[in-house]
Amino acid sequence: MLLLGSRLIGAPIMGLQTGTALARTSRAIIDPRNLSIVAYELSGPLLDRQPSLLRIVDIRELSDIGMIVDSSDEFISPEDVIKVQSIYDLHFDLVGLAVIDDKKHKLGKVVAYTLEATSFVIEQLNVKRPLLKSLNDTELLIHRSQIIEINDTTIVVRSAEAKAHEPVTQAIRSYNNPFRGSSPQPEATTRQA
Image (cartoon, rainbow, N blue to C red; front, top):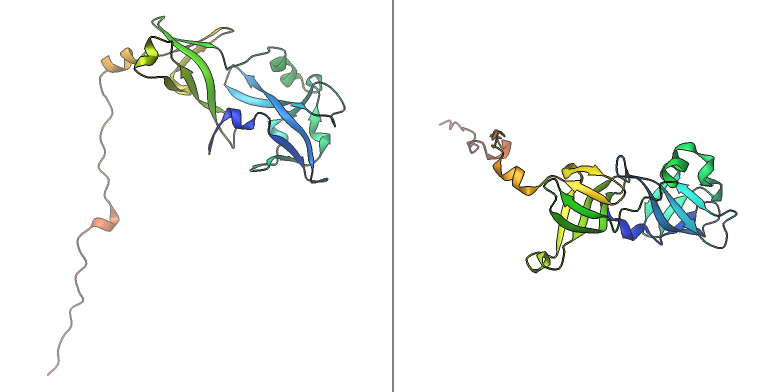
């Protein structure tokens, strides 16, 4: 299931042991190497330490009432897990990055992203177009497969022109629908006189 990433910011973290809200998410910790969310930074009055993080692997379920975890024992500080700390220290924020194509044409800025709810992998970027280009279309959707490079300030994607000039090599397959076969024949009945 695809979700808009902003729906999970400010989401309550519910504990199974207490049945109450333990904290709220404040920002996603995104690994820029593979565009996956590894943790969420948390905020709230019940937290023992600042900053506190919730790793994605510790989320039991994602529901309408928020993210469900076993207890507040799942919350970590960034230095508890080396991989999480190295990503946390990057302070990478996807929203606001400029998007250009491989021909150096400015496409716009990332205003939102869509993620797969089971894996927390970012699938699409919502890019707001610059003012003059927004007269034709206000936003672009860019799939993760179009991304060539991500750095601190920009995301480089494949240009649409390159796709238009590539030859089509995909073969069309014919599929037989088993329900559209020959029409069933009535059973033959024999009359005995």
